[in-house]
Amino acid sequence: MSSQPVEDTSAQIITQAGPHGEVPSQKIPFVPDTPRPIEDVPQLTWYSALKHIFSTYVAVHLAFCVTTVFSVLFIMQDFSNTTFPLHTLWTVWQRKDATQFRNIALLGYADWWRTAFFPLFPLLERGLRPLIDSPYIGGMVIADTAGLGMLVVLYRLVYEDFDKERALRTILYLSVFPTAFFFAAAYSESLFLCLSLLSFYAMRRSNWWLAGIFGCLASLTRSAGILLLVPFAYEYLYQHQFNLRKMRVDVLSGGLIALGTGLFAAYCYYKFHDALEFSHAQSMWGRAFAFPGVAYFTACKYVVSTRPLSFVALRNILDIVQDFFVLLLVILGFVGPWRMPRRLLSYSLYALVLYAFFQMFPISNPYPLTSIPRYLLSIFPAFIVLAGIGKYRGFHLNYLLISCSLLFFTLLQFLSGHWVT
Image (cartoon, rainbow, N blue to C red; front, side, top):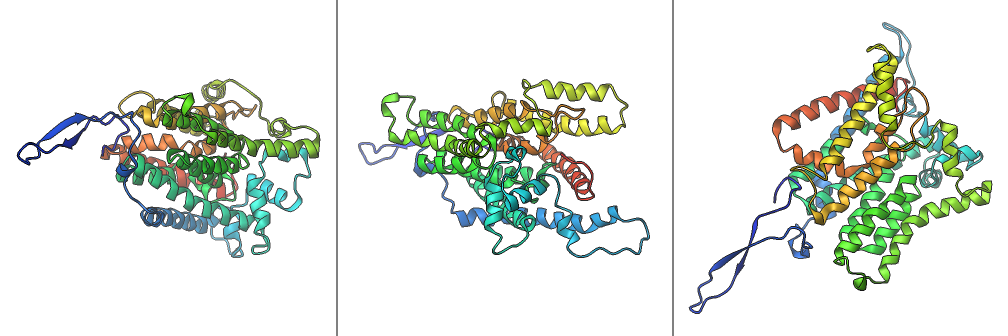
């Protein structure tokens, strides 16, 4: 199987016995847009997928642990006799959104502006309190567990739709993206991506009700979860040959994806008399609607209008590079040698709508792309395209060296209390 998502032009061999029992062969071109027969899908158990990704998961988390230990050197003066308590190793991860989730877990939505944070992650933190008293630690347990599940599902998804090598590169490239340390923090990134991948995997296997259930949970985790309706609609129509007469009652399962957002909207109306309170709350965090692309060009404007080594320029450059890099991968999902074939177009469509959605609510200050590099982690089809390019050894090594350098630089910034998106 090709390691690139280009249309497979290989031939299938069909045999037919001749008059004397001989078996001549005939090559018939394989049509890449026909549904893949279930018997052609490589057999892989969930346990086997876990074994394949586990070494990457452990290695990355060990690197995070080592970085966390030595990050203490950045918050003490040279040759200091100061010592820190052991719990510093996990309290240094308690930043920004983790604090908001902790407050919601303990107090609920006491303030209307906290509805900007969707409820499933803090609900799970609260559910763990009988076992883990600290919501911070509970949140990290949830995030790391979901992160492991996320890699297992992603590996199996790519393995079945592409091949083993591409699946391995995909989970590696995602794991070392410059903002990937958020998968280990008490943030909702890993939970959202895990649920989104489970929904997507169910769609690809025609398990529509299961796809709807996982999509509902994803849309209870992040507002972007409702965008799973786009790949759901394409997959359902494609797998039914775009024939409305072939649709069944299971098409209604797509409504479950919107149900998650609907339930939270109903709660907001009950609590604050505004069903869209979670959207209006974005203004408290400095976010306002803008057309996709505005934030990118605004950030570029701040870079060119300030000194190259200023804080404004360097922080914006970090955001711009990551944002543009993922945009390029999204585009390559549609055009070029690494584009998705029609049977897998749902990947590219989902990547496009996710990317556009993240660009629509920039921060109204000199750092308009704030948090967007973290949101980009959920655009998993971009990393599948990246893994296709990664079959070239030179590109593979360069990506790992540059991305790992940025990953551990931003992690050290985060752990030492600096402002990181």
